[in-house]
Image (cartoon, rainbow, N blue to C red; front, side, top):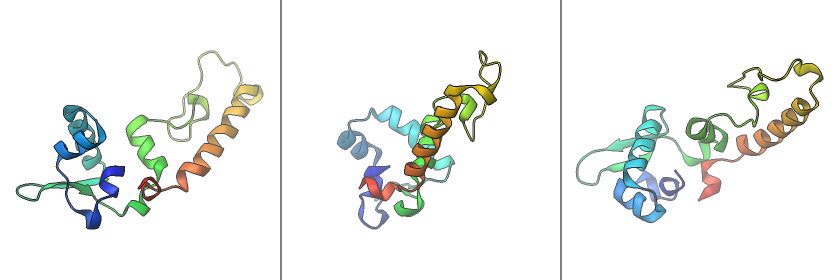
Length: 123
């Protein structure tokens, strides 16, 4: 995504070029780009001059949104995740769990940074 953000005027980039420049296996990159296209982060153009390009301005794509779609939850524990909440199997009471309170604070601090940084900041 950072590679695409660095392109001038959303010029389409071939998968092979991204793979070589960023040292990412081509097959792995293809799968990621297909997922990102389905989710509306990138578009593609076929034929001569084709390739992948950002679907939105880099300044409009938060790092938090990218991490969530590529890696999953930002929270380190499922019991503090805003989007992927799950009760911890070994925790009898989240309300009195001191680890939970620390992890909520960590999640909030991390989100504060990632939601306020855009893909443009990686250029």
